[in-house]
Amino acid sequence: MSAVAQPRRTRNSRLVRVLTAAGTGAAVLALPLIGATSASAAPSTVTTAATTPAGYPNNLDGWIRESLAIMAEKHIPGTYNGIYRNIIRESSGNPKAINLWDSNAAKGIPSKGLLQVIDPTFNAYHVAGTSFDIYDPVANITAACNYAAARYGSIDNVFGAY
Image (cartoon, rainbow, N blue to C red; front, side, top):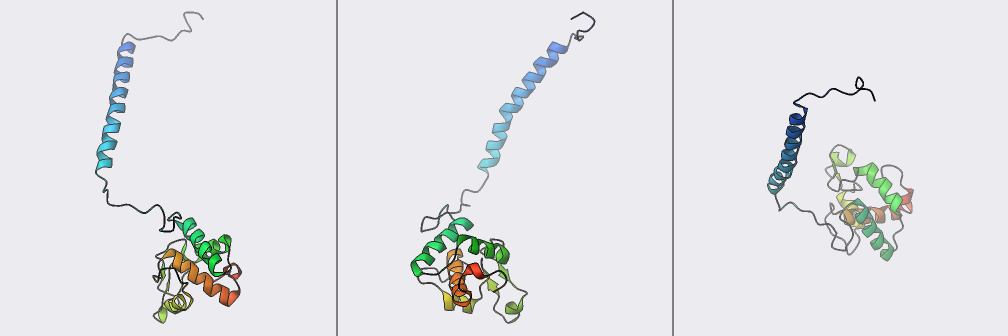
């Protein structure tokens, strides 16, 4: 390479490289300290159980699988896909969902929970061994599937509001 094509270096380029490296090192050292300070301020009492009392994951997948196990014991038909499809349509997976605007709500009995069950239906189709709390995900799914089995043959046959 000829001397003409080589990049020209200034006198302070070494000083700039040293300061840049030192500054980067200081930033790297400061970042963990800042992160540690922020993380220690988080409340330690806010925790969610990783599993249900029956040992399933404490999330939509676990609630459906636990319900399916109970349903199998009680001979209530239904599949994971049928339950999941209806939950997503009814509540988007929110176990605390409540409908305050439809005809049931107008009568004073709003639909509640993952599968939007009204209190009289939940009570009539409650499955022994599950919670009596309509907002309990497993109890809500299992009661709704029991109702759907009696009315439609299975939750798998439900493709709209029921």
